[in-house]
Length: 114
Image (cartoon, rainbow, N blue to C red):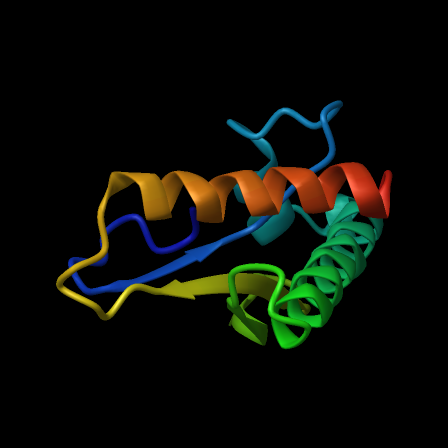
């Protein structure tokens, strides 16, 4: 999750392949210029995830999320792509959140590696 200090209804997050250490990659991508190639590869990976989810949602087959091409810029000037979940309904409950998470995980399987 990119906006961990947010107290609102929007969650901005990134998706990574299984072989990526998600505990360290966000900080490295944001601050280390030597991580530029990884950042760009993961940006494109997140765009592919978004396109897959968008296409399914437009066919009525899944949950719709949003994407930002530049949630923030890295310290070295590259944009960071983020996926966004806007949960606005007061009636949203745990099964719906699980469905959203599962649809993102399923999209990872479909789009393959970064």
